[in-house]
Length: 183
Image 1 (cartoon, rainbow, N blue to C red):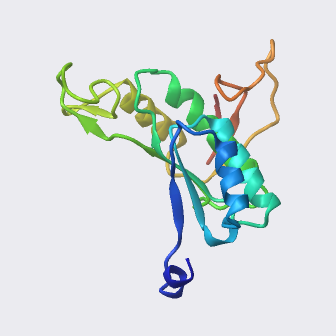
Image 2 (cartoon, rainbow, N blue to C red):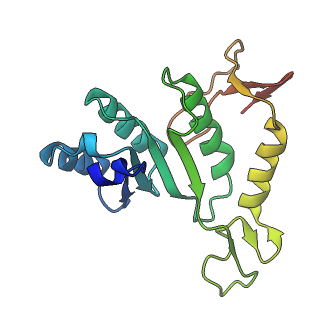
């Protein structure tokens, strides 16, 4: 880490695989006293709650609270983007140490052939040259938010109230330019 930083680089640890618990990663970083040698913690295919846990544990130990997911969404759960991305955006915008480079979601994989026998069919953003349901959802969110700066909007109520969890949609409000967006 010292040599990488000496040349202006950042140390990205990961990606921690979803076959091992994030608590195991926390224990490993504690045991090896490695928290301060990492600039960004990278997870693969974990739920949103795991990102929160890792960031919270990093902050407790004085480490940079940067958490990335570099392999998100490689499945056919087509409501995923509409739920996960707004929840992550709300969490990030609510963070007192807001920095857009601290939390990133990298979709994996970009594309696959439009052939049901192909690896990744229906799990990527593109199937051949066409947007998949995941790609359509991401394009819709991008169009809704547009290029304007985004802020949280919390001055609203939903009746009956929906309680957000790590696995389902919640009550999220955003202001992008002069638009209000509710997810």
